[in-house]
Amino acid sequence: KFLIVQTLDANLKPKGKPQVALDAVGAGAGELVFWCRGKEASQELIINELWKGESQAAIKHLETLEAKNVIKRDELKGYLEKNKDYIINYEKRKEAKKVIGSGRMEKQNDVLVAQRQKRKGMSWSKNGSRNLAIVTAHLNQGTNYLQ
Image 1: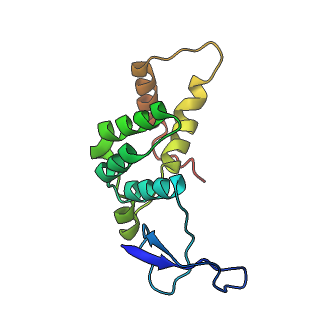
Image 2: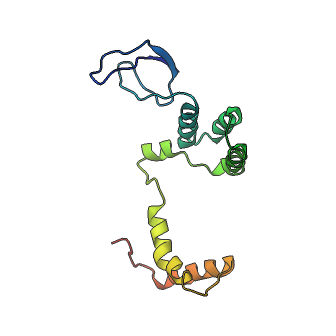
Image 3: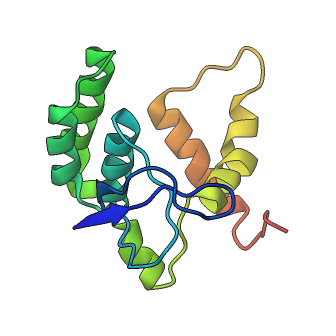
């Protein structure tokens, strides 16, 4: 939806002329909002679409952007196209009060596997890493490393 926004000064008094803005966050009448324009506005819109798991909409917006680094933009677009079925809808996860983030899993990997693999002179294949993770997790079953 579109909103009419009014820039305010430090004392919350109107400054300049009202402007029309695209609402990407669901603001309501009378709410104070931060707004941006140009590239930053497009980025915010894409981030909000990805937060909602709307990868196809984000891809369409990427296609309309004039980027300084076209290669990086196209890499991001390719990544989203390849993984569109796996992009998580974080908005629904939040509503369902589910955990958002991978911190616990990353810590477990660091404690169980990564420390062993970082020793000097060691080289690991994908299969070897996977097997190490399985064996180490089995040996440490029930151990809580997050305390």
